[in-house]
Length: 311
Length: 250
Figure 1 (cartoon, each protein chain N blue to C red):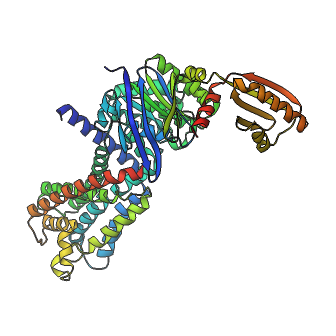
Figure 2 (tube, rainbow over the protein chains, first blue to last red):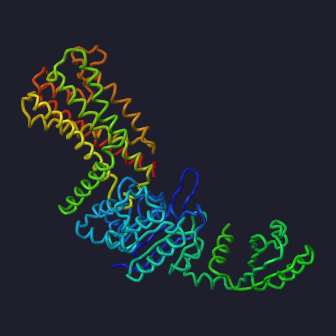
Figure 3 (tube, each protein chain N blue to C red):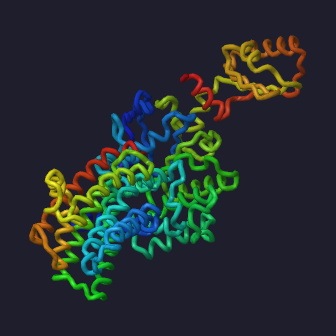
């Protein structure tokens, strides 16, 4: 059995004149959590949809457990569970009926489905809502139901598209800790997210996508090291600053202005120039510095840096 | 394909058929277009014209089989695409063909159930067909034929169920007036007769007329064979066209 349970070669897809995915390749090892990161519209969801065979690529191939997804979709999909971005259980069926339906599609014996369904609903804390129609469940409950539906077949590989998008902190944390438990059990998880903290927390390896291409890949740690020559300066002034003016002052450095707060990312060798510039601004606009910090980049900074460089 | 795989495919079709039964039998378009429409058409045909129940039952059974069997299939694909549950199904180990066959089976069983119920009511009222087994066979073939015909309409690349219902109504409603249900085919104007002979409804209407002892154009064997051939044509076309339009739905 191959070590890579998912292999994607040169996938490309256009919708009309828009190139959504352009030559994406990656592979995922058994038992790891692999993250596809990127801003909205980067092509993450289209990549996942092609990888599981929901849409056909214009070019390229995807393999799950060695089966070509587009030539042998039934065999390939028998190894996977999928949690799509948009909630889509049958809203006129109960949570329980949805689980029974999906279990039936995998041809799992009824007794096994019932046992697994009870177990999953209890772990995901929606057992008490099992006989309620999905249309009356909250977004968080629907999301957890989708996770249970994806796991009812006890799949080797789990695909999650924005698993915690729009959820409250408690539901999001519950799903994250559940994913880590799945990893401990040896399951492979492939997730897309634009939540960088989440990716840094969960993923063994990530691929950062922008404009349909993978622009960086590696472990979160590797990516931080790769951008180790950069410094992040955090400033907090006593009053709000004009964002446009500040950006012009620090051009060509990357600057994020959030009210009184200012974040500048620069190469460590440019630190002295930046500090001189800060002193000039403070004098010219009669500002006081309430807080100043200089540190290496965190994963979010790396992400912004990578995306910024690819623009 | 091995026997195990075939039985798994059939089981998946059955699971999806049960899902469609549970979800769509009581949906508005199904009740209106599948049950109320044939009933009101039949009433408009018989009330005040002095027809006995025995004389009008063939028309009711024909209309029921036609409308009931073809009422669910047009709406399932657009409905499920709109609800995003089609994508959920397609991410499981099924093909689009399995999903479509499950839908067609549910629709056929609904048609068989309602038409058979009318035949049973007829039996209680002493309206007895010539050959009950042959009649049930004919109803089964016609229901399958009309459900695949309905599936053709579901290929309209829209996620608005009303679009599919409108298209299917535009085809189905004219057919009932040219297929020998209300006006016998020999009495139709000569320029309509060719349409009558390509209408799938003509052969079932003729078959039902024969089954209840009224005049028929063809032998029951010809009627059933033609319906069976039309079933294959509709099924192949519906599966092929839906596969093509599927991408536009997702």
